[in-house]
Amino acid sequence: MTRDKKLRTVVMHDPELDDLNTIVRYLLNSNQFVTEGLIYSSSRFHWKGDGKGTLFDGESEHSNYGIGPIAKWRWDEDSSFMHKAVDIYAKVYQNLSVHAEGYPHPDELRSRIFEGNVEFPGDFSKDSPGSDLIKKLIMDDKPGTLYLLTGAGQSTIGRALKSIEEEYKDKSQWQAIYEKVSRKVIIQSFGDQDGVYESYILPNWPEIEFREMATMIWGYLARKVVQPEDRHYLSAAWTRENISNVGPFGEFYMVWGDGKQMHKNDIADYFGFAGLTVEQLEELGYFTWYGGLEEPGSWISEGDTSMFMNLLNNGLDAHVDASYGGWGGRNGKDIDPDGVASKDYSSSRWFGAAQRDFAARLQWTVTPKYKDANHHPIVEIVGLENTTVKPGQTILLHAIVKDPDGDHLTGRWWQYEEAGTYPGEIELISVGEAQNTKVDNNYPFVVPSPGSPEIAKLKKDEIEVKSRFTVPTDAVNGQTLHFILEAVDNGNKPLTSYKRVVLTVRR
Image 1 (cartoon, one colour):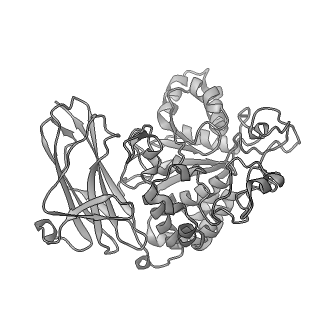
Image 2 (cartoon, rainbow, N blue to C red):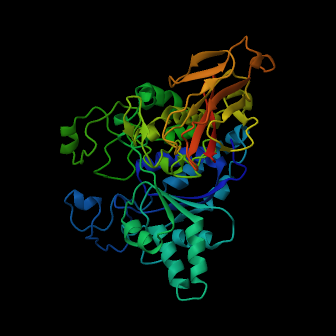
């Protein structure tokens, strides 16, 4: 863990089963954030209606199915999955707090649940409790970025910004407020699910950074992009052992064939069925947009999880810039094992480590003693005081990795070539005699061998990882080199920690 200060977040979801699963993972990681709000939001896939029976004849998912004007779409009056998730969090809060500092009190989270602009998709014509909260947070004087994370539409964000514009645009302080808002807000979203970003936010607030966080690996189509060595993390066997059968959050989490349905008579949600054919589902009135059924008990989706994964305090510092890359992917393509540039690989390459982290955190929820669970390795960079380098210079990358549980460790340095701007591969040479080992994701790791001088002063739960390289002589001024220290323990639920070193060429 690398950051001293937690990042401020507002989390927005519509009542889709993948959002329910996403909020479970978010709450298990909530010790890493200042969660300013949990807001129910609408999208073209889910909207509540105005409660007066007003028919909506615009475009949303229902019109794709040939359904005419309708008063609401896939939203029960008592939809409250975030309230339920926080109630479950309250049950496991004490155990979680044993294993990591900083978990917010359940009452704090409950007080920050609001309803946003949910009546009709793309409607931000009036204020809502959720938009009022976002406006208040944007306008406060607390330093740092406010991350608006949405797995739904942008209407609640759009209303907050519109309200600021309406209040201040004709006043003398407008330019200062416009600049403050533009600097302060970063939107991280799984797409533009109601068109509000494109129609209002982008034209009127073009300097607000918008990070597109849509990924396949965290969604319904994960099986199409998962790496072969990680496929078992989607299986029923792994999911039952590590998620579904682990405490109240595991029971709450939705999987294929579990008999659950987010909304009554939801014709687009047939994931709870088991043993039926597509034809049988269609005879029952379901739109089989996914296709057939998967193995009962296996992964369905956490489609919106990628919206917060790059904010995790795991050492990758992926929050710094959208080009950095991390567990939520990157705004560029990574070269997959077959040598193909792939946007999907920029997120799927991390899936195994993220799933093991999820399994470990779920285990924390049912483990009241620290010694009975696994915890993340601690990584410290040694001796690298200057992050500017010159062509031809020899650089030593040196880290010490410790394990709080006394587990054995493996580690390696590797160049994250795609994240850097120097367009080439750099040869990393391990320092000292080395041995190669492998971990669950089949990556080769380099650690000091038992007989090497480097390990003599270290404990069994502590390793030194060193690599040396020469800055290429053709590197030009301003180009960057990204190197990742990746360390894994051998605990029952193996955990991975990182440190990213970014070096800038200065001639």
